[in-house]
Amino acid sequence: SWSSSDSVISIESAGEPAEPESPYRVVLLGASGVGKTAFASIFAGAADSMDSDDCELYEVCEKDIEVDGEPATITLVDTWDTEADADWAHEQHMQTGDAYLLLYSITDRTSFLRASELRITLRRFCPAQNTPIILVGNKCDLVRRREVSATEGRACAAVFDCKFIETSAAMQHNIWEAFHGIVRQLRLRRDSREA
Ligand code: GDP
Image (cartoon, rainbow, N blue to C red; front, side, top):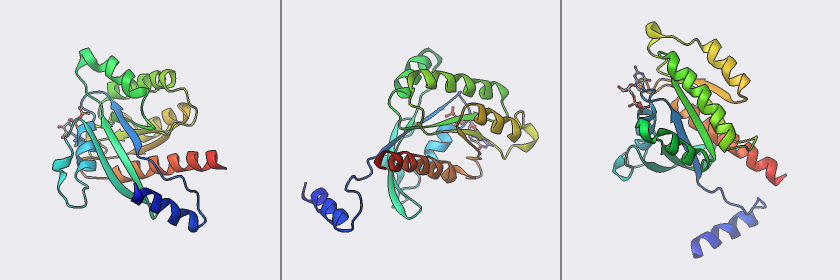
């Protein structure tokens, strides 16, 4: 369309790479109950108009955000949890994501173990070494119910060669940091490809 060629011209004239950022497909993975829906609803609620009707929860939501002064478009995919479908659904999503947020709840050790399993499955389905993955310990507001320490989470992330962050969807703490972290990693990968 004229508008896209227009932007290419203006980018080229600015002396920068002509390749625009495409929407980044970010997939939420994790056991049932860890807070994926809560994450998705915070993301969906970030519409400029504060009107999130255009994003159905449990599905796919696309948003323009700004990270380090540069716009980025994220297509967020929330996986569904019904046990019968989980493996199949996860496998589908594991082949199509540009980046992954791998959630567990700090109040639920089983969900932490599940995150490890998902990381291993992800390695099988998504063998690219540099696919950005962040291990996310959610519900960090529930301090007295903590079953997984931040030290354990960080150690697990180190073993799995991914980033780590603790979040609270309930307190809206570190949720955007997680999304921004994903975009920064995707940009690093993009820039290293262009180099
Ligand atoms: P999902 O199954 O992974 O989509 O998990 P949900 O987003 O449905 O969350 C499961 C439950 O945990 C819900 O009752 C949420 O309100 C609650 N929850 C999600 N995130 C947090 C959090 O950060 N802190 C607390 N205290 N509760 C949370």
